[in-house]
Length: 179
Image (tube, rainbow, N blue to C red; front, side, top):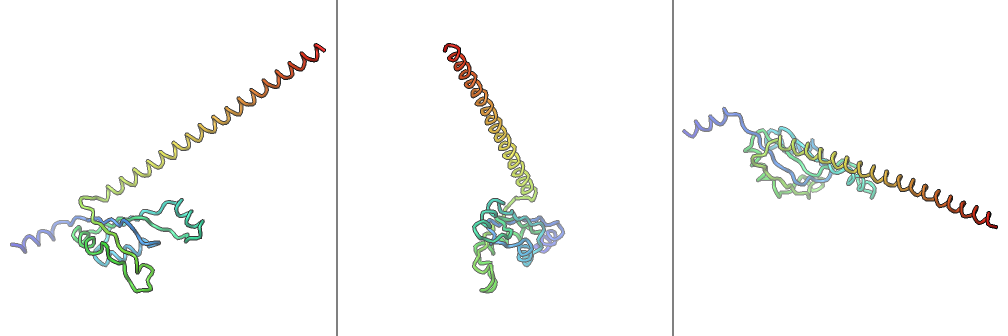
């Protein structure tokens, strides 16, 4: 009877599972991540969050590498059981490789995300993009208000200065006419 249940599971379409990589080694590329995780099972989609451009610019300014770096990532496995297994087995383990390997001393930080769908990630990315655009619109609006206020202040200052000049000229004319 147990064999029948297993056969039913094989016939059913397996549900995908998503693991979250909260920290990626410096300059690890998506191809390397895909290659590494595909050793455990079939990898579907992969998304790595690129680092903030201002952070990259600052790193380059102070003599660091200009290579593209990623801060976090999500890997979708075609089978949820494999995703759970990968998260349990890789979490807090060395990335490894030979001692001379660039990633030898780095540690994986992997977590399985139960009931998480790829659509949630897409929604999150879209929401962050919309929020960023809204912040930019707000900043631009505020900058325009500040610029307009400055220009109005300059105009008021010029008008005030012109009034002062006229008063001074009128005062000079009155003094000249009295003498």
